[in-house]
Amino acid sequence: MKKRIIALLLLAVSVVLGACTSTPETTTAGSQTNHTTELTPPTESDPVTKIRLTINGNDLSAYKIVYADSVYDKSVLPQFTTEHDFFKLIADDLAKRIHKQTGVQLPVVRDTETDESEQEILVGPTNRSESDRLDEMDIYKTCVKVKNSKLIVGAGYDSTAYTGNKRESYCYASTYHSWDAVEADLAKKMAEGIAAFDFSSETDYSTTVDLITVACIGDSITEGAGSTQRDFHAYPAVLGRILWKDHLVINLGNSGKTMRDDLGNHYRGTTQHAALKRYAQKFDYALVMLGTNDSYFDRSWPDASDNKYLTSADNLVKDITARNEDVVVVVMNCPKYFGTNGSGSPRVRMLQNQLPKRFEAMGIKTSFYDMYSFTEEKVGKSNFPDQLHPNDTGHALMAQELSGVLQKLEEGSYTYILPEVDDGKPTAPPQGEIEEGAVNILGKDLSKVYPLASNAYTGWFMQGAPYVYMNLTVFEGYTVTNLEIPVSSVKKGDTLTVSVVKYNHPDIVETLQTYTLAADFAASAGWAAFDGLSIEVPAGYTLAFGSPADTLKPLYLPTKTEGYAFYGAGIGSKNPNATLAINVYGKKNGE
Image (cartoon, one colour):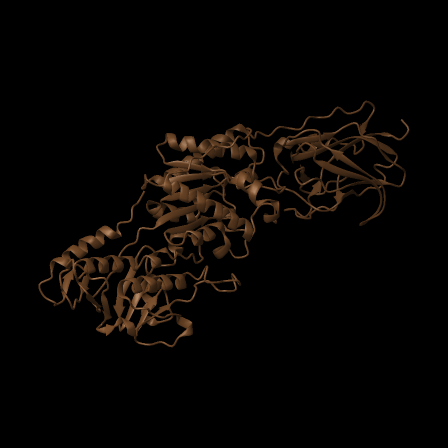
């Protein structure tokens, strides 16, 4: 892991400066030029405990510290307080550090709340023209330099170049550490008995600061989908604010992307991946969370898909570590998925479990975090409003948890435990046995007309509407004994409601009786069968199929098909004409 090198650089500079003590004239060491007005060697009886600072000959006490207003619009966080007003926090800290070494207490004011004057110490990208140079500075570079009569104290703060995202991504750690070089050198001067120092236009303490760099790699959940303002509320942004003094956290998320390179929506084809390859040598930690969309784009997930996922993961981690053998890759399984669109397959979680040991065998420093269990147990469904993406609170809770994980990793006290997961292979629901004498009331076997293995309609889903059969004469006079519904997923106990109704398009005008059917199996990708039914449909009535349980995920036909169309299709569906497919078996009433 990288170690901070500033102190060593300053020590080398200070040794050169300290050696030139024969005259009070200007001395130069590299780009750093210091004016000293007193060169008295220290004695045990008269140590130097404070140093007198001047700026271009002007006494420090004439100055005020002016800090930049927040780079975030306050409408983003209406309750914005000093807790997140980082340039103010840095300015307050600078005032304390200056007071400790000089005994001078300087006023601290916001740039928008004070008139401009000649004697100012500018912290961050203020609205003063002298601060303009900070707007274009690299985020790892600091600047402590006199311009005109003002002293600029700041650093690069916009990490957009490192993210590949066309949005601002701010960092404050460089600015926070920009005074470190000065503080260390002043301490050295006092130890050598130098009691005064003048910042001149030639004095330059600009340097490179060693930030702990964390790259967050993932899909829409990483990019910040579900939050009210991704730049501010995505979990990487919150993580960056929590760890703001020493870390640079960059958001390399891209919505809708997969780990697998073969699915056509893969992460390795994004601008974020290009940025990753360009700057990976700066990373200390890479948090990788990809897989939610893999299971969405390959719902059937045959055995051959396993190797495609693992090989693609190998390719990605090689990109991360190609020029940086010290980066720690933290594999994170995907957050708990509460919805019904087929994302977040347990099969993918099983494969994510294999990645840490796989990467370690490749000689890569690897760790693991169980984000699935954390979001399931500690974040909860209420903080995933669309059942897939966390809201502001969900993102904040994830960031808070990961800040503790990173702290333990840096301390060397973190040990990961791989969760126990099943193999996640799709298991077709058991086929029911059609009761003797029952016939397919619809006249066709949909499982043959639309074989599930073709995946012809696995992308169409619908929620919230009643699915009402549109032909009143089909079910009347029958007693239903069996139902078969094509599903991508079903859990034991999942329910489906079936109602006997009078129906006058587009309304149900009377409900005679409602039946709740519960699945006694857990499986996926097959025809869910409900057997042993006795649902009598009198003359003049038909059947209405109610919304299923959240985890029972029916499949829908992409077009209305004669004899099989159900009212209510299209709500929440990719295809507005998608309709529920179902096989209904029964006998004539009284038989």
